[in-house]
Length: 115
Image (cartoon, rainbow, N blue to C red; front, side, top):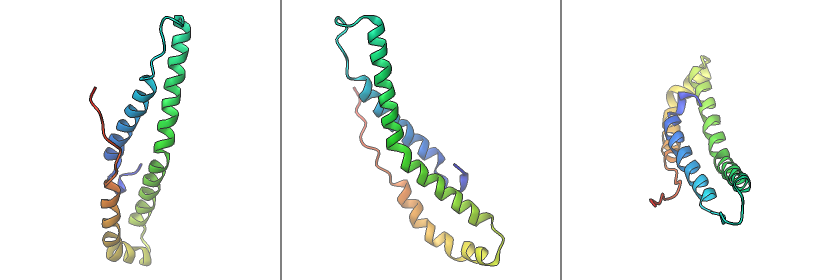
């Protein structure tokens, strides 16, 4: 993600919260240790981690695509030198995008529980 929308750090925090939630949910389903040997338990744990990571990727995919696309478009506009783009950038872009930036910062990733 480029620096044009100043959301990289926030997106990283969002990613970490969602990743921890997905992995915690996947790993909280304990299996009976008496019924399985070590190899079976490790394979089961591996599959649960894999499912948690897939859920994380599915949950974060569109948010990431949206942030990256917006950063690229804004970067293109800010670096353009044409008369029309300069006018749009200087007169309209800041007013129009300030509301959108505030809405992007208001992302609800759910509550965290301390166990």
